[in-house]
Amino acid sequence: MKIIYENPTSQRLKAKVWHNGTEHELKVGDVLELPVTKGDAVTYQVGRFSAKHTLSYQSPQATFAIAPNKTLQTIYFAAVFVLIMALFFVKKPDVVVVTVGVIVGLTGYEALLYFVGYRARPRH
Image (tube, rainbow, N blue to C red; front, side, top):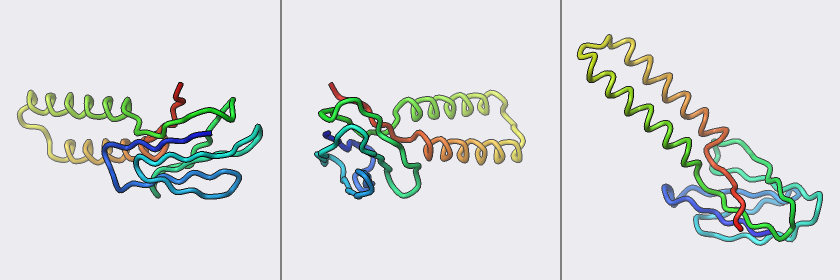
């Protein structure tokens, strides 16, 4: 199995891959070749503050790319843009409501990043 780590937004963030309990560390652009067989456990984690994910594979010759979840980022920035436009049209929003909205929005985004911030997509 071949695992490629792609992260154009952060060159310093490292990924860790575990193959049957053995840890491998990847930097951006690194390629990891693992001698897997059916039934082996392969998990990965990007950075220290994200969840571990299991890599489901059907073939020992599979190739995966670990990359940021661009859909999540696009949805978040679109929502922020809509909120900024709403604040522009309201003219005098309540400061408490804006502060609570920003805190809830950032907390929700960080929680989503923890669980689904990075994906391992198969390469064909």
